[in-house]
Image (cartoon, rainbow, N blue to C red; front, side, top):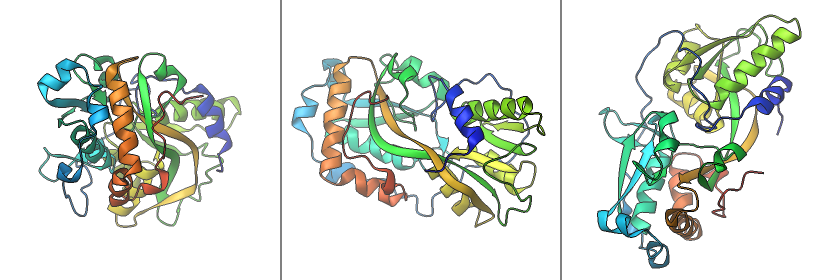
Length: 308
């Protein structure tokens, strides 16, 4: 995949423990925009009744989880189409929501999904949450503190106003204003890109951070920012939800696996990995991802801690 030069520099600097490859939240949110999340064209809820219990996987669960009868899942619900809130502002929807529901069913449990601050999910694994399913990119830094079971391969991408009125080049964004969701690795990468522009004596790259990707997209559509920077499925969904007011700039790049976060060395990791493999093998995972237009990135092996 084509990787812009400045992003290659930025990727080297990315190291965070939380995020979509999510990172630190040290930067202050700048600017405002619509706080309304995109809604799916058809907000259908995944029906877990067709999922058969994977008895071998369920047998691996810790007894306290079995007794509780629920799989507690932490999720940051502002990242459509992976995880976001339906039009009622309450119901979580998206492919990660459907995956969590299917996994719980395969383990003989009900899914208990709770919206949480992204950087608070990993620290709460094993206490408040049994699993974190929220577009977490698998990284070496993360697998030092938690287990991650891969299920999807996702790249990153840029988007601009349709027609690219600023004539921007994905290989050189110095002088542009870039919008990112606070806490994502794209925020760290944009910061490294800005430093590279400064070191090269080029025009400054300005970074605007927003609480949700919807806000970031809204401000690119409105012209406050020039470029939207996010995971490639999120860019694709933003283009669709804005009615073609955005278009992708350049090709996707920096493809990496995303994984389900569980406590390091836990029985829950083993149970989820086996149940997830079953969903891959029987076509359930592909069906879920295809519903949301993300099946292209599906993995076929539920590897634990696959970061290199």
